[in-house]
Every structure is written in structure tokens, then in C-alpha cells.
Amino acid sequence: MRLSKSLNRSLWVFHFNSGSCNGCDIEIVATLMPRYDPERFGIKLVGSPRHADVLLVTGPVVHAMKDRLQRVYEQMADPKVVMCIGSCGQSGGVFFDSYNLDGPVGDVIPVDVYVPGCAPRPEAIIDGVVKAIAKLERIQEAKDE
Amino acid sequence: MIDVILAVVGGTIAVTIIGIIVGLVLLGIDRKFAAHMQARVGPPLRQPFIDVAKLMCKDSIVPENAVVSVFNAAPLIALASAVTLLLYIPIAGFYPLFGGLGDAILVMYILTVPALAMVAGGFASGSPYATVGAQREMVTMIAYEFPLAVAIVAVAWRFSMAGFSDPFSLATMAGVGSGVVVWDIVGPLGIIGCLILLLVLAWVTPAELSRVPCDTPEAETELCGGLVAEYSGRNLALFYLAGGVKTFAMTALGVAIFLPWNISWFIGITGWTALIADVVFFLLKVIVVMFFSVSLIRVSMARFRINHLVSLYWGYIAIAALVGLMMIILDVFMKGGVVL
Figure 1 (cartoon, one colour):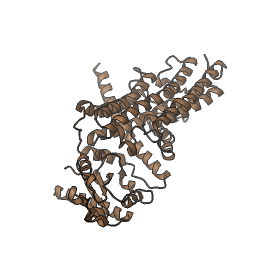
Figure 2 (cartoon, each protein chain N blue to C red; figure 1 turned 120 degrees about the vertical axis):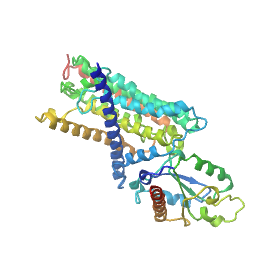
Figure 3 (cartoon, one colour; figure 1 turned 90 degrees about the vertical axis):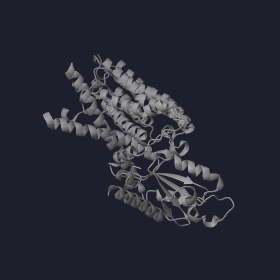
Figure 4 (tube, rainbow over the protein chains, first blue to last red; figure 1 turned 180 degrees about the horizontal axis):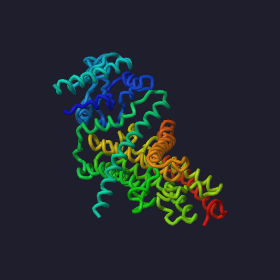
């Protein structure tokens, strides 16, 4: 994996809904609006997983979405970061132990940053992005030494 | 002979570097304009450079069912042909490097090559999204070519009626050496016609560059990025660079035909000061043209559906271009302005 400083300053985000109630998706859209303006840091939403650096997963991964989630994850070019937005992706949330869940997200694909909340506020999602960038910088420093 | 080869190779390399840098700066300025119009701060000016550096570091994935050779060649051809455009377009009042070898008609042909390369890459990537995007790109190309051709040919024809020996050369249109621009040779009716053609060219620009509202072939919400859906890493970076260079070439073409004044024609400066003043003034004109033909339009409009796009360009904009052409023809018949 080749990490660079430019990656931290130009995170392109792909948004994947794995069976969420749309609460987290609305909060993601709220994070991207002019009030918070994440484009200041080069963050922008892209339409194809091939272009993306960050995969934002919402929802608890229902049975039908498991293969799709794995496939989208594999379609992304390295280096990539996975962020799991909302309580559902961590534990199943209100859908915990349901018959139709293959999740949570951590069981299907490796997750780098969890953002808890039902649904998490935009500030929490921004904090998650900051943590993801801090993690990338830590890995980079460890490699440089 | 060896001098000529060195000059051509060195000049091409210089134009490539200048074109890429100016193109990326233009994309950054465009994003800054758009951000400020939406009451945001927006990314730093060097954001496109960061994006390209990042894409160069990323893996470049070739899909399993892609035609590998075409898939990898398309981004290179797109960038190379976009740079080739700059060799034929007068920049900052200089005679273009290959100006004696090709004219406005050749520039119109080369303008289609980056789009054709993207179409080939889209079809070669073996994804249904990219295929639909490639089909839409071809339809868009057919739609905007006619108004673009009318606008350029009308101006060239006016130059020939005024007795210029090489009317189709972009250097003649830009007044390189002569200091005569299209506004100096047309009469009152011709001025109205040229204003209409200027607006037509401004409207063709977003379609040529696949920007909102004409980004139907790349529509990321419906087609996941359309033409470039399967591209990643280095290949995507090359398309990104080609987009920047094309933005520069398209705006420079608009400047060369309709706004070619140099600041040194008006104030009596010579030597290095004149050179620097001309280059700065030219870049300002390019930024103004980009603001009105790319940034303003893309912020104030939503995406067209593909059939709306065709009816807009073949209907209204083609009619506007023909009206502009008629005005210029009437201008000549009524002996307005300079007529031989």
C-alpha cells in the first residue's frame, strides 16, 4: 500500500447503504452541505467505487446486501479506508439478532473507523473523518521511521 | 533541420507543461468560484494538484472483461490530443507553435478526439454504465458540433470577406501581428451577430467539457461516473489532466476568436514588460470566459436529460448560431464595416 500526504488531503467518498433506515444517509448528506463544507479539505462524493478512497457504510448489512458490500469493497483501488456510520453497523442496533442480518459490517469487511449514534450528528461524522486521517498519518509515520 | 526538430520538441514539451499547470489551476479556480457562489469556503486553489498526486499514488485497476489495450490507451490519447489542441491555438497573442500547419477547421476536428478517446475507453471497460455513458457522449458530440462549427466558420468567412489572405487561420482571427480583430471589421449588424455567436460558443463550452448541465455522459448519480466509471488511479488521473487541459484549450479558443486584444496594443510598452502584461491579461481573459461559460452555468443549473440536451443544442442554440451567421451575411451585403 502506498500512502501519501496527498491522500489525506483529497479523500473521495463513496456512500453505500447496506439496509439502513436512511437516517444515517440523511446525516451524511447533511455533513456534505455548505454549512460544514467538507470540500475545504478535498472531501467529495463520487459515483463509482473505483474512484473512491473512503467507503461510508450505513446499515446492519442485510442478507441480500452482503455479497454486494464485499464486491464494492473489492472494486475500490488501494489504499482505501472503510468508515462505518451508525449503531446498526457496529452491533445491529435496533435490528440486533434479526433473522435476516449477515452483519454487523465488521463481520463482512474490515472497518477502520466506527462512528456510533442513531443517527450520528454531522459533527460526529466529521470527527470520524478526522480520526481516519489521524490513523492514516500514524500509519505513514510508522512507515517513514 | 536539427534546430527545427529541437524547437518543435522543446516547444511541445513546454506547451504540455504550461497547459497542464494552467489547466489544473483553472479547475481549482472553477471550484473556488462555485464554492463562493454556494456560500462556502471551498477547496484550496491547489486542490486539483493534490487530487492528481493522490490518483497517481493509487492502484490502477483494469476490469476483468475490459479490452486492456484500448482501456489503457484511451486516457493517454485523451491527454495527448488535448495538449495537441494548444499547439494550434494562439496563446497570449503569440503565433501558435504549429500555426502554419493547421487552422480552425483542424482545431474543430482535434476537439472531438479527447471525447472519442473517452468513448473508446468507455466501450472498452466492459461495464454497462460506461457503455451507456459512451453512447450518451456520442449523442452529445453530435449535438454540439453544429453550433460550434457555425460559430467558427461564420467568423472565418467574415475575415475572408474583409480581404484577409488566410481567414481560417486562428492566428489571423486572433490578430497576431496585424492587431485586427473581428470586432474591428464588422458593422453594426455584424456586432450583434458576433455577440450572438459569442454566447453560442459560451454555451457549447460546458457540453464540450462534459460539465454540468451537460455532464449527462458522466452523470455520477445515475451512471456512477458513466464513461469513466471503471477507471481508477493513474488512468483516472490522466483523464482528470485531459479535462483540465481541455478547459484551458476551449477557453483559449473563445478568447482567440472573440476577445483577442492584447494589453500591449493599447499602452505603449515593449520588451519584457509587454510580454508579462500580455500573459497576465490573457490569463485574466481566460478566467473570465471560464467563469461565465463553465462556473456560472454549472452552479445555476441542474443536469439535462439526454433528449433535452439534444433538442437544446440542435434546436435553440443551432437556431441562435444560424441567426448570428445571417446577421454577419447581411452585414456583408449591406457593406457594413470592412468589406473588400
